[in-house]
Amino acid sequence: MLYIVVRVIHEYVLSLNSRYGEISISFWSISFFTTKFNPWFHNIATKYSGFLKVWFGVGVVVGLMLMLGSIVILAINLIWIVNRPKEELVLTPMIPGVNVPTNQLVYYFLAILVSSILHEFGHAIAGIRERVPFSGFGLFVTFMHPAAFVDFRVEFDFLTQVQQLKIYCAGAWHNVVISLFCFLLLFALPFGMVPFYKQNEGMVVTNVVQGSTLEGHVLPGDVIIQLADFKITDFNSYHESFNYLISENYQSKGFCASDEFIEEAGNDDSCCKGDEESSSFCFEFHGRTICAPAKQLVLENQLCNSDLDCEGTCIKPRLPPDTQLIRISLANGTNLAFLGPATHLFYSLDVSAFQPRIIFFFLSPRIPLMIAKFLQYVLSMSSALALLNMAPVTYLDGGWACTSFLKLFFPRLEASKVQMIIKWIGISTGILLVSNIVLSWIAFT
Image 1 (spheres, rainbow, N blue to C red):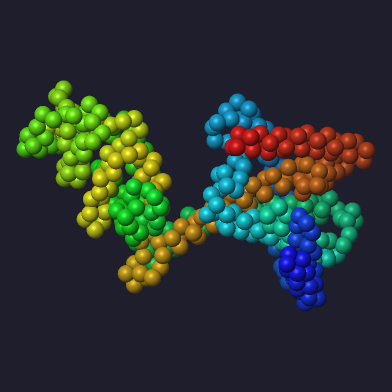
Image 2: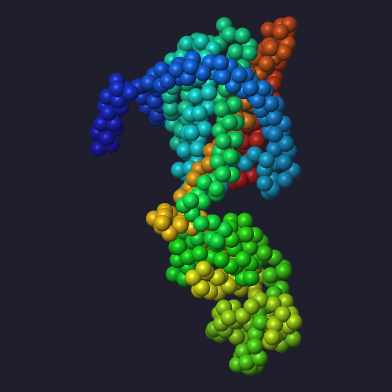
């Protein structure tokens, strides 16, 4: 059965080759190569030749800065890993299933593909503009990771060093531009969503994690406007509220209780002595402990620091370590009581700051988040590709560019000495790069 499936796929691939391009399949990879885009590349390179001369000239300057910057950042990152392995790194490896959630793998792979394609487009257009014979463009997937490539028919030896540098640096230069573009789009996204979504009016719940204590109590579409006494308007205030909830400032607070409430509780303090069957909760005030229904107190009374904040008495819950008693206030007027670690509350809910306007009720609050998440991944991937690909390491763009820079800045230097310098720079930077990759992987896993 497996043989038949493979045979059918193989025959289908062969039929595609004649129509669209050349497809190759091996045990560890699949690649696709085509010349369909060649007229488009040639058209851009010739139509905008004057602009592209300046454009790729700027790319050479940026490429040199990236090359030097890559060495500095790799060195700093390595020192950081060795001395502070548990702290956040300057360069953070993105490992699917470790720090890239499985539900974000689509963004991860698309970002790699987009960054790689636009990177190679830079090389293609720069090469064609410098009149290098161009073969075509291709895509490949190796070990589940997609990437793009371009192929030129000849080496670049007949070009001047500046012309070569324009080609070598074009990919990284395009990645820098993509990163800046994504950054600007992220900044402008809230403004672009104004006609379709309300903002700064609380956080819309988009999903409740299955099995959490909030399941069935908080529903998708509910709008959280306050946690405890902290008002929620946007993402920043939402995240700040959790810093507040785990702070000593909140932990030291109690709830205002009327004299009647305390009288109803009586002198029963069995729950304070480890009675697990009690449905009440332990509170203390003025050196005294009582058992009282926590839900009623949290939902109906305000927070306090002392009796001066209340008309009655400020009673404080006796909580286990890392546990909070939190009132969740919804825009529809509903209040809920949450008992547990604030981090559990944070990870139990997926939220959005975008509420669809009435006339756009059919729009999902997730759409702006999906756009933002994709832009963030492209920004991250494209920045990393620009920086690391310009590291002066053999077989990377930075390795070829380093040779051209040396010949450009030191034209009288003997060819043998240039090769020796390039060799040692490549080995040194290669060791630096591999050390970063290995130790970063170890630090994260």
